[in-house]
Amino acid sequence: GAVVSQHPSWVICKSGTSVKIECRSLDFQATTMFWYRQFPKQSLMLMATSNEGSKATYEQGVEKDKFLINHASLTLSTLTVTSAHPEDSSFYICSALRSSYNEQFFGPGTRLTVL
Amino acid sequence: KNEVEQSPQNLTAQEGEFITINCSYSVGISALHWLQQHPGGGIVSLFMLSSGKKKHGRLIATINIQEKHSSLHITASHPRDSAVYICAVVTGNQFYFGTGTSLTVIP
Image 1 (cartoon, each protein chain N blue to C red):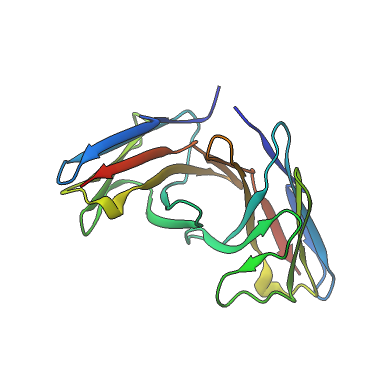
Image 2: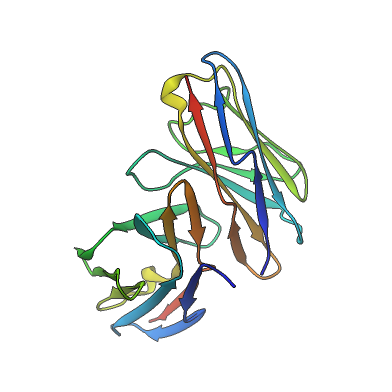
């Protein structure tokens, strides 16, 4: 099946720094990618929808200036957590939509810990 | 081999039918999620299970840890239930997702 990778798989950073997470569709083109966040013992929460070549659409309550999304190519979307704080510590998951098949494939997730 | 297998991949039902979607997994887990996604939309979490059974409205989710199997049931299905249903398991810091079951409920 189609593969979506995320990098890094985990990251620890100091408060105030910025962290970039990459999401790649390895064997198909994805015009749409989604970014999710999950806090411990809670379910997934959609943060934003990323469309190649255009601005991301953010869900209500998600700060677009804090969570910068760039979908510069059909196989890569990045999420940058700017000026990260401990409350941003979470599990971040991306998914990529293989539009020709209307299937969605998920990345393995990135564990962010902000100290 | 995928760590999470769902069946069926596609399902069409008449309104009012009882629907079952199955999920089998091959890894040890701390929790299992059932997720719903409407066309073009993001994911909505329906259930998070670690044992037993949960019910919310017309939706019922069960899990058998020993058999590594979970089922999602929809009673009295309705066209608005049409969506992709995704099973996801959590083990340690890793998520494993099924590829989803596409459900269409016909009026």
